[in-house]
Amino acid sequence: MYTVTTANELTELGHNVTLLCYPDSKIYGKATKAGLNVKTVKAEGYFHPFKILKLGGFLKKENFDVIHTHASKDLWLIVPALEIYGLKTPLFFTKHVGSFIRKKDLLHKFLYNRINTAFAISSIVKRNLVETTPLTEDKIEILYNGIDTEKLNPENAGGKKIREEFGIGEQEILTGMIARFTWGKGHEEFLEAANNLIQKYSNLKFIIVGEASRGEQNYERKIKNLADELNLTDKVIFTGYREDIPRLLAAMDIFVFPSHSEAFGIALIEAMAMGVPSVCSDSNGILDIAVDGETSLLFKTKDAPDLSRKLEQLIRSPELRKTFGKAAIKRAREKFEIKKLISNLIDFYKKSLNRRNVKK
Image 1 (cartoon, rainbow, N blue to C red):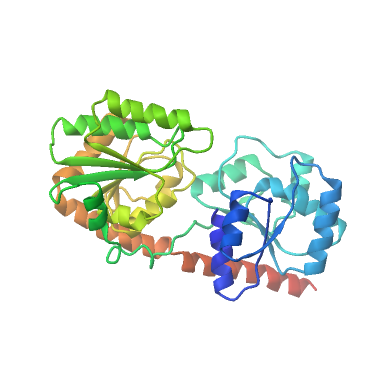
Image 2 (image 1 turned 60 degrees about the horizontal axis):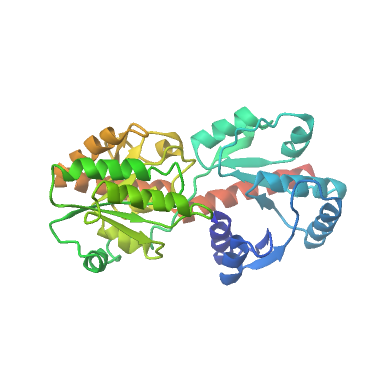
């Protein structure tokens, strides 16, 4: 979905953007709702001679300045289409999730060698690209996903309404997480830590925001059953899917990001932008975002007792929460403001176009 966010930002800046996507997909629905110029292509699998020819004709007709794909599978259509029609259009690729598949055979070399610049959304993803694809480090840039920090402003959010909605008192400390219900997001550790902490502190409440991913309803039930087994019914709030994320974050005193393995973490940078101190697992893309002892406390991944200990430090110290919150806002605005990141992206586009013009 970040592709739609990028297209929106570029469009608002006056650029002419066309989004090519699968018909009736979530991204299609979101893009059309946003009023973007959307074209569709339906190509399941990898080898589609007719679709390649059709796409090539479309790309030649439109004569785009740049092409930017956000999925490696798309290269199987785009690269042959460009080659068949002799198009020299600069090609960019963003890698959002790491892969365990090694792609250094001749076919993948043909595909990846056509890329002008690849973007990795975190250091761990860049390392994964180097290890699994023919791309060399000089062709890979780290370009984080971003957020609109003007919309995520703690002064305008109105978290009090959320606390009133769920009956959370002014003196109660609210700790929350925002994540889809799917294995690996750390719901189990969150609940175990909650269970550990309520034995020592009576003024705690916990909130879990999100819904099950497709096909993950059983996992959601498992987590809710675990909350019942731990007798957390009166202490843990399950909100389901919500769109008022800024308000929910504004209502929290502490944010938890307990994911086992995350390429990045949009929810975490949203919490930081809202000035919420956080406790995060010490893994992968999280290390590009959270600064241990400055914006957050890091705990050992999958280790609920360690999560409990780190949470307790923030529970016991309003001053530390305030200090972390201020530092989190500063880091979010400096590193993850989407307008800055889109400006960087445009600079990369311009550099490739300049090199192309010089070669001409």
